[in-house]
Each structure stands twice: as C-alpha cells, then as structure tokens.
Length: 159
Length: 364
Image (cartoon, rainbow over all chains, first blue to last red; front, side, top):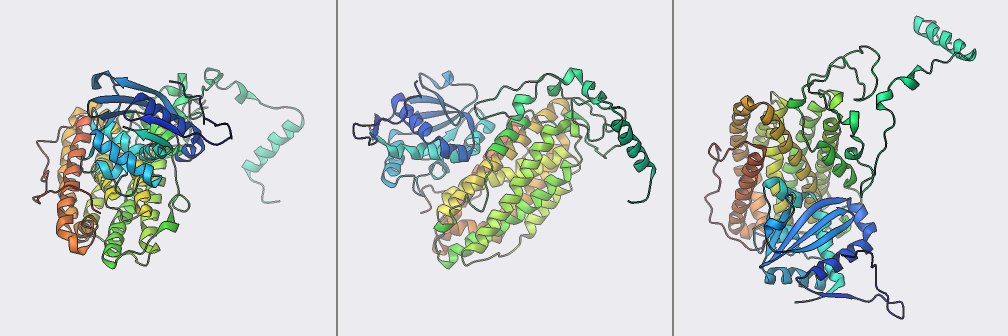
C-alpha cells in the first residue's frame, strides 16, 4: 500500500473527499491516509504497536499499526494467515455499517457506537484473539483505535 | 566557612591537586566494554527496548545486594553500601515485556486536567449522579490502595532490574492519576464522595499484605485490576456522557498494561518456580472470596445496576447487565491466568456467572 498520498486537493484548493466501498482494502487504506493526515492528534495519544484483524462476515482484513500510522493493510484468505500476535474485531456487515454510518452522521461515534460499547456484550461486535493477553491489546490502544474508526467520518463510504 | 572535617580536608586536598593540573580522569577508561553504544530509533522514537542491547541487555539471574544503587552495565569500583534491596533474584520479579510496556506507558500518558472534556459535563438525574459518584468513590479508593501496594515493592527490587522498577513507577503514576480522576469526577458535577466499602478494604489488605511480590501481583493486578479492567470496558458501555466515557477509555488503556505486565511476570515465575503454584492458588482462593463479597456489596453492585439500567427505575434490568459484566470479569480473569500458565478453571472458588437472567442490548 502507498501511505504517502496525503490529502487530495481539487483545482480550487478545496479538500476532495475520500470515498471507498466497505469492506475493502481500499477503505482501510483511505482510513490509514486520514490517520497520516491527522498524525499530530495521534501523537497526543501516543504510539501504537499492534496487529488488528477486522472480520466482516466472511471477509478478513489485517491492519498492522506501528508508531503513529498504519504500516500495512492486507486482505486475508483465512484467520490462520494473520500474524501470530493479533486481536480480532468481528461483526456482521450490518453491525459494521451501523457503526460507520453513525460516525459519518455525528462526526465521531456517539455514546452507543464506540468500540467499547459495541463490544461489551460480545454483540454486535466481538473482540477475540489467540489468548486473553492478545485481546487485552485492544484495551491498551483503545483510544487510538477509536480515533482511527472515528476518522471514517471523513470517508464517503459505500456498501 | 564551616568546621573542618576529614571529608572537607580530603576534598580541599583534591582541589589543590587539580589546581596543579593533576586530574585523575580514570573514570574515562573505567568501562571499555560498555563504551561505543549506538541506538537505532524505532518508529516512535528511542525506547528502552532500543537501548537494551549487548552488555546492557544482560539481565543477571542473581543481582548482588551489595552493588549499591549502581546502574546495570556501569563500572562498580569495589563494594558499595547496601541500599536494602531484598528482591535480588530475576526469577522472582522478572517480566519479559516490562521494557516494552514501559515505553508504551511513558509515550501514552495523559492527565486529568486537560485530557478529559470537562466542559461537556452534563447535569444528571439525582439517581444517576449518586450511582456514578458511589462508583467513583469505590474506584478512587481502590486506586489509592493499589498505588500504596505498588509503592511497597518498588524500593525493594534490586536496581539491576531497572526495567521492572521503571514500569512499576509508571504503574504507580497511573494509579495515582486514576484515584485523582475518579475523585475529581465525583466532586465535579454537583455530587460528592459517598460510602466507603468495607469489603474492598478486606480485598485490598490481602493484596497489600501478600507475602511475596508474585502473590501480590497475582492478587492486585491479575485479580483486582483485571476485574476493574473489565469494569472500565463496561464503563464505556454504562457511561452517561462523554466525560465519563473518556475517563473509562483512558483508564482502561493503563489498566491493561498493568495486567499484561502481571501476566507476563506470573508466566516467568511459574516457568522457574513450578513449586510456587500452590501458594498462588491459595492466595487467589482467598482473593476471589473477597472479590465476590465486594461484587455483591450494596455500595458496589447497586450503583452499577442503576447505571446499567439508565436509572433507579431500571435497576432490575441493570442487574441483568451487571451479571454480564461479572461473567466477563471471570472469563477474562481465567483467560489471563491460563495465558500465564495457571489453569484455575477447575479450582475457582466463586461462581463463573451470577444467577441473574442475562439480557443484552445497550444501556441507553
């Protein structure tokens, strides 16, 4: 993936909105671009070093976070292809769409649509991993991960 | 000028020699093996993990208690006065991820003054404000005691294991900040502190009086902080506003580091001391009983149920949601112990679920 794009500027100097279909590698790459553009904010939260596997029905995406950005995004065939150290965030397309739409509508997740709220009952989203220590990584970087998904407000998402 | 003493005479003699051009400079050649180090910065900067290389990465199995406060890897000219460290065995205190977690901790610090959106505090109905203030009272009390428990061990750990001391210092700072932020929330919105928890005292005293660092860590971090980590996750679910949600989210990050460090330590300890497993089990037997008493104490469970039910009128519904929290606390607790190599599923002394009909959905 190419993380060096930065914001796209239109002819009049206005910011051209990013758009991508969810779920796709492209959608996560756009999100990574937004993260890069907002690096100053992420620096306030501190660096992140983890691998997050996002499962949307039968689609699996692996995102490797390092420092203040996303190092790589991959579409996986199977969960067994993921890095040994990872946690998963799993839900139906419907559940993910509800979160993304809520973020788009409000500019960030409202109180009912934060990662913490959505995962607490293991539904509509569920946090998993090879063991509890890996799952706990989701807790360790939660503020950054929430901000990462909140940045999807800047992406015009289609399904 | 003050009274002349042998120390002052010796110092002045040295100064006279220096005035004649007689410098020692022996220190410049004192540590050739430790000279020439270069650090390669990682993506976030230079961390502790980046400088712990070569001889500086050599962790002694047994650190001399007579090494004074000398830094590991420095030259020690003879014996130094003993500073009183009594934790000198690597296997009784080590955690493989301490340096990494220390870097994470110092780079992800926050403060209760400017990082919480206090301007978004909203007036709450009295039942919700009281429930929140009671929960904050309990959490702040726990964090204060947890900080004392952490402080108790830092000065006893040999300086050769600075990774552990440094990480514990961040843990202590986190615990102090948590005490501060929950107390601040209780006092910031028209409410105040409510009732202290006798059951929490029982639990915390067990942790503070633990006979070894490992049992203290198992009790205070894996059991107590592990349960509160799950509570902070629930706090995000229960929080009535952005202020509380932010507090829980930030505290959750800190708590997860403490728990990870403790799990890693227990794993190291059990690999080297499988004979110590029974001592850990016995401490957890008692700790779980105290935790269960605390969980069902009115000043603990009722405010949680009111928050989970979005008000006193919804306390019954809230209770079923608190049961979900409890089941998650136990599941994650057993999972962490299992990761550390302690299979406690067959020995746990408390129910894995509360006999309350669970129901999902959101609190509000």
